[in-house]
Length: 302
Ligand code: SF4
Image (cartoon, rainbow, N blue to C red):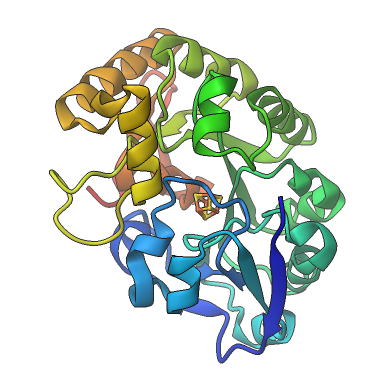
């Protein structure tokens, strides 16, 4: 895949949250770049346009280039505070293909290790995260670090249709296993839910992790009147491939209920939306225990 890498100074690096991420309990988001070279066909970010901090070239040429915030490490050094709960990132995958040569994340992790926030959560689908495993282990020793690793389907043919520039599912599962083996708190995040065998997919996630499972169906205008939604390119693929039911709220509810039941049978939770993403923002002090010795979590968001 061909893409261009640009660099530009930014005025800020940590943004106060709003909407979905704020409802999940995060106080700030950290986006090391603008535009994402994974170029997923369904990506919600370009539909946010200027409200996602984008420029017209970004949403018109999504995934064809990225612009790194060249002064991000220096900005982060000045902006970090111990009470921040940071999500990285709602607008770009921090381990996108362009990160392989840019090496921005190791510099940001050094700043985080030096001045750890309250919670730091990384949202990614990039096995490149393993490059930074030693730094992640150092950060996890200093604060609450969570990795939310996206696994979208159990079917690689489907994966190639919707996200051809992302790693195969087997490689993603292996990345989750290696993070877990290193002692990193890693969640399998089944989002967005692409066409799949729901029981098989959640089975893979339950095997690869020892945590509750986060999910989220395609966002659709029928139930989400405003804000980010599924990019047209992904909707067109669903139409062409006969997968339109995966954008139907009633079908989505039936699928997620089947997944919830399979997770429950394994003694784990499966949930969607801000309540599920809120698991990434919690710290142990916020986790209570019920009478059976099982963990229970205060509801964050909805
Ligand atoms: S990895 Fe995330 S931010 Fe990047 S294109 Fe895919 S969905 Fe969008």
